[in-house]
Image 1 (cartoon, helix red, strand yellow):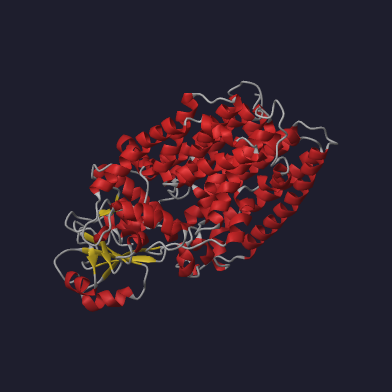
Image 2: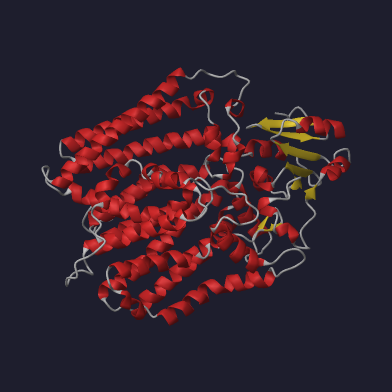
Length: 606
């Protein structure tokens, strides 16, 4: 099978198999995490159950800070296949496959068939795209809409006179991006196209892009939801309404770090850029020479528009605009995800050129140098992970992962902040993933080095891809071990065993602490001393349900006739509940406990 050239479908089939091996297991396991993961899944479920496709809701409260397409996709998936973990993740998983196929197509169209194939391989087998899709966030899908829009733009630019359909198709992709992530759906493609045309000295091309009719098309697609959301959520009571919260608070104030409430952190700038090497591992070892392909100034020749250099420049601008944009704002680790497809195309082109070059050429020599660097990195990773697996001692049988972790609550405002809790003692629970990681990096880097030394570049790249399949599977297993700490499904299962229609569930603190319990129990939670952050603004509307409890409310309810389930991660809360009335432990998992005010039957206790 010829994977990298020609008109065969074997390349698509190979990418599909890689996606199947890496991303499909993650649809089913591990369980949904708390915070954004469970909260966004719950918003999709409530969209379906409330039959409200305009105003998002979380826990019955208006949730006005996000664009609707990710939640529409989840709601459709739920309606077709039922409300489960894999249906919550299905649309996102298919989006990754669509993005990989797009890179294959775009690389073939604007570079070479081999470049398209390796670009898709880089995206599917890199660590970042896998990690960024473990939580229900749409940032990689933003990269898909940007890529599709740039495809239509570049196709029209190459012809010199873009047709109406290509301009309108670009406008549709921009509108879909706006409905996916907000105004960056306009900012990113507009900035990328402007900077590219500025660099190639062809700003006049903007006049050929039918800006007036394209703007009308964009508004026809994107405006209806925004208008309906504004009509259904006008200023009321203490709430300033959808338009202020969505556009002013969530876009402009968030960008400059003045958004209220402040429930997010800012990833350090140098680390934000440096982590590109991690997110694109192992292919980032070839990034320096891949970037050297890019020419910021193109020679104005007859074939400039159809040259590979022009395409590479566009892909470079795609990535750099996004990285620079977030360099001046608040940022999370995953904010660079929309830039990764552009970098993958640049890397894919370099890998294709290397595989077709002579053994003694400069490009082949630089590939061997990079393979040596990666060999050193791979051996170091193997030594560290294998050492951790060997020296870590099995914990006491009565201890779980949460008992072995540090607590760094200040870091939880970052999406990956919980991983800073890991300790040496906790590593004993990750022994097999650590061993698998050592094997993946030792043999992956070693065989890659050996094969490149022998001139078998394609075989070396295949080894790197397969070694990443093994490493990502190890990461997947490790996430399963971490799942009880990051999520609350075991607690929800325990509650469901005896949950009755009149029973009530109370979350200790803000909704994000136990959002997955709402999803798994299909119940609206009462919130104890947690009218902050995600649900704060929606709670200001006069029709907000009375779900927020203070100390007096809890003191009145706990000894009452209704069975209550109190979910907390604070050990001190048990004494508080015991002071209010009879208290029984129903379940404990991941450092969190469910207490109830009614006796627990032996068949449901954990």
